[in-house]
Image 1: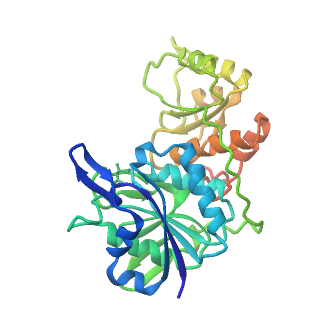
Image 2 (image 1 turned 30 degrees about the vertical axis):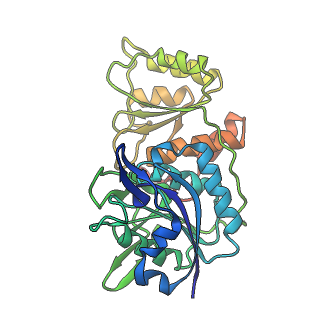
Length: 335
Ligand SMILES: NC(=O)C[C@H](N)C(=O)O
């Protein structure tokens, strides 16, 4: 029997109704008792790590989770992490960078209805997560609604639907059907060949700006005065930002000169950004911004936090963004 570790962190799956709304309250033992026959197929160990709504999960908790996974990886065939859905995509992305090259499957899952609710989707999601965790494919994944998504490509796209996550700009890693669990090798990142080393240093001073028409460029002065070291900009379409009347390009110049790492993505969820396509984008590239290409916002933000945690050298940050570390970006394809 495969040895699986279940790490619990809270989320709706472990929540109970209170006078203040849903609050995580069920521990791992209580959750395991609700698995009925499912746990009989695995040698299961349960550990409670956190008991939080995932809106409260922040970089400090990411480090707690990463360290627990790293320390346990040699004792288990796979690890399942139950986690709230709201920030699961951020956690999955950042774990993908911190635990790059992890030899065993690390599968995050959760639910839209508590596991104690009669209509819960939690059991189905755990079933998929356990199957993936026992499947022997190393990496960080999100299992939800009978789908398995590469962790650094997952985005939460629904607030209540059971089909809450999508694999953005990347095929599903696996899918469950009557044929069983079908793994898609083309969706699995190539093994790096290097042993997994825990790299959990992070820079928290990263800001995300979603451009709106007419956004005041002075926002960059404020971010610099607050000592932000990195900014991710969700620009328009394939790669646009305004420079008439309110000159964002001039402020990007000042920010990059001051040592800030600026990563530009698209606010479109699907397909890749390419800032070399239009004049506005080319002007931004000339100022030294880093292209995010087809990365999700969650992956871009966490990669920037992680990269700035690894190095102070802007050129090394740029080099880390010029390649895919765990399948998070496609850098070599034109649109
Ligand atoms: N479905 C959920 O898990 C949402 C919950 N608020 C959380 O992220 O912890």
